Length: 583
Image (tube, rainbow, N blue to C red; front, side, top):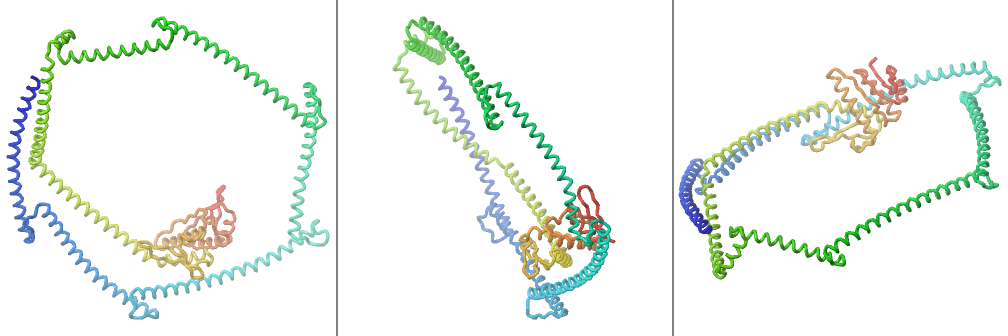
């Protein structure tokens, strides 16, 4: 009866599904008709826009055609702009070449009127470099002449001071014991004598201290020997003829041997006590086991533990059989809705087994047919529901179209934002390039002069070389060779960096109020000669602003005093600060 009720319910659901399927088919036909009308309207609109549009075009194809048309129009506009830029660039290039040729002619530089702009630019750069080199050489010559005159004057002054000091030294020596022999000793001889006299006092004190320590050590040795003799007598040892250290070693060995034996005795005693406790525990456990064995054998009526184990296994099997029996009994009562198992046994005894078997086979076949039919109907219902959901999508189509338009507007807005930012970046890069081109010549000239001075002529100048979007700094050696900045040694790179900072400071001071120039011990890798040239550059910078140099090297302060007499030294405990100002 339960299966018949389920079958009737299935027939009812099948009828409902067939009705819904017919309704879905009607809605599908209506949707197809509406789609064909929309497609015809789209085709008519496309033909009005362009006669070349195919008659089989769809909405996606029309959108692709519109995108291609917009791209073609944009490409044509870009092509026209590029052609105009090209013509303007050619005109600018021709005008620039004419100006460059006129400038070379005015400067009396040989040229060929058929040369290209690059060749003329190379000739102009060579002429400028040659003139700059000549100017540097002339300035270097003038500086060397001034330095020679200064050093000559300093030499004459030093010679006069030396003669006056020799006369004063002779008078001082004659007035004391140094000139008692009628000869005037040299300064080195007097200095050596003074050093020896100064060393005599500490040496005498060290001698007295060592003698006192030796006496005390001898007393300690005698006292140690006496104590060892007393201890040896107490221990019953014969004192050997060797030194007291031998007796001390023998006594130490005896003491260590006694300690080890005492420790071994204590360890054996503890092990013995531990073993006695373990034996007591084992005896107690054996007594307990024997008592439990007697109880189990008496309970099961056996004579050994192996037979008692078999009894326990049989008890476990009986418990499992009872549990399985109760489970099967409960399942039978639940299936037949009968609470008493005796009634169940009577009903099963009265039942016809062949009839029940045939009925079971028939019901199983009907169940399989009905289950397959239900599955087929559920599949058809699911497909119909999916088709109905797909057709009933007017609002979904509108929502998707709205989202597409929103996304296109966002893409357009972000594209304009990107173009604005890109244009700003290009403008900033162009401005930086123009600023570098405008200020490169004067700053590069100052940096080249400063680098030549600091390196003491090892490098005669600096140059740049384009590398993709940037420029690479190159040092020009005295022999005409070139070397990249990253290929220079650490000290040379520091000198190059200082030269660029000096040039930048002068460039900044020309157009703005100068600010203090602070350097923190940057001459760590400089030798004294290059440090001297660096301080000369600082003195020139002090003519237009303030220069502060921090150091903890005393010899740099001495060099600064010699190169720049107006420099002021401030001792800050412990570092030193060097400040140079304009006179």
